[in-house]
Image (cartoon, rainbow, N blue to C red; front, side, top):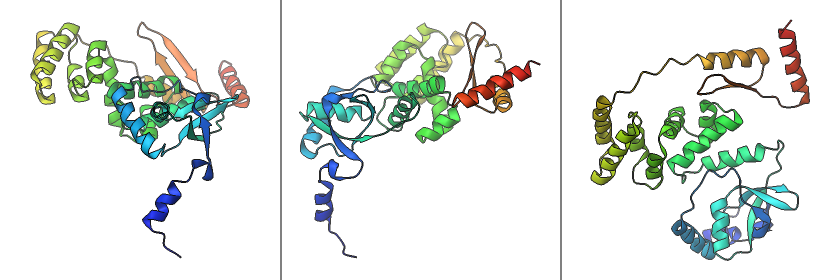
Length: 280
């Protein structure tokens, strides 16, 4: 077989995307933003750098979209879309995915974006929480889908227990996720504010922040929390009995709701029958 040199490979790679099976060029004004984009901040300096790269080399990785009517909904690639528009391109290469469930593209968009490594810790944590709350994922399933360790998912989700002013400092890069988790030990917002200011002003390490939080926690003891009911056991039990995914979502003020998944009308009828028979 004839070997191809680097020049020929580069020349091949520079062919228009439309020559490659599965890609096509779509006008930018026909692509709507992705409603499940976990990224909340697009930094102008980064976009300018991306736009400059696109001006020189083009969009090297196609965007992922789905068709809706005569337009396209973005699944993944909003930074590339914004960068291409900033670079003055009128169209971009896309891969079109035809998805089944009405919310499947939203779920896929979220997973695709969470697999990237350029989200800030807060955006990432909120994305993980959305998969769990809106799509009934377990932490184990989130970890598997985005290629992370289960402990990483748990630690990121813990960040969402912090007040807004701490999360804002984390997003601005004033503190790291390690600093933020150290502050979780503090129950009082005033103590958190005091500790945060000290961390930023004195440039404390994560270890030093942990020691500071321990000292402040002794000054303001954390009230004992009541034991939680075994929701995980109840969730597994109901799932086994009904032979489908079940999610129990407790409310802070007591009570809660049970979410039972079904894939089609036939399975819904089966579940109704199971529940009806169980009452006899």
